[in-house]
Amino acid sequence: MQNINEKYEKIAIPGMKKKFGYKNKMAVPKITKVIVSTGIGPVKDDKERKEMIEKSLTLITGQKLKYNAAKKSIASFKSREGMTIGYSCTLRKKRMNDFLNKLINITIPRIRDFRGLNADSIDKHGSMTLGFKEHTVFPETSDDDVRKSFGLAVTVVTSAKSKESALELFKLLGFPFKH
Image (spheres, rainbow, N blue to C red):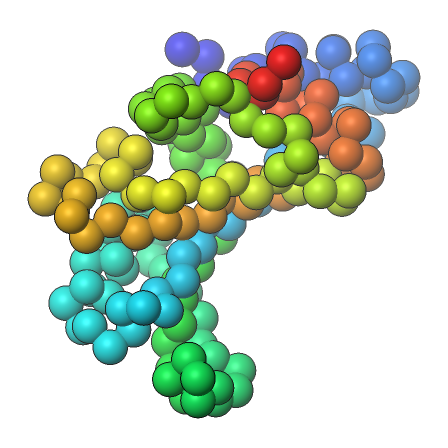
C-alpha cells in the first residue's frame, strides 16, 4: 500500500506534467485540505446521541471538532441562534494524508454495492465532496453504533483551477472513479 505522498511525488506530478504541460512541479495542483462535516438536525435535543456523534467523528478524524452554530433562529426547524446544528473538522498535512490513505484504501472499499465515485462530485473549482449515508464504513467505529448511525460529508479541496485537472489528479492518486 503506497501512501498518498509517495503517489503524488512518483505518479501524479509526472502524469500531470505530461498531460497538462506544467513546466515545473510547483505548478501541479495538489490537495490542500480535507473537511469532514455532519449536521445534527433531528437529534439536536438528544444529548446522548450528540455525544455519540461527537465521539465517533473525533475518532474518525483524529482531531477535535468545531461546533457549527445556527446563524439565525428558524421556528419551523426549532433552532435558535447560536444553537449547535453540526460539527466540522478541517484536516491538513499529516492528518490529512493519513485520513486520505484510510479513505482510499479502507473506507471506500467497505461501502456496500460500491460501483465507483461519480465524476460529477467534483465542482468547477476542483473540490470533490463525497457523502456517506452511514459513518459505520469507517474502521474506527464500533458495531454498537450501527443502530445510531449518522451521515457525513467529506470535502477534498485541491489547488486545481479546473474540473478536468482535479479529476486527473484524483485518478492518479488512486480514487476509484466510474469508467
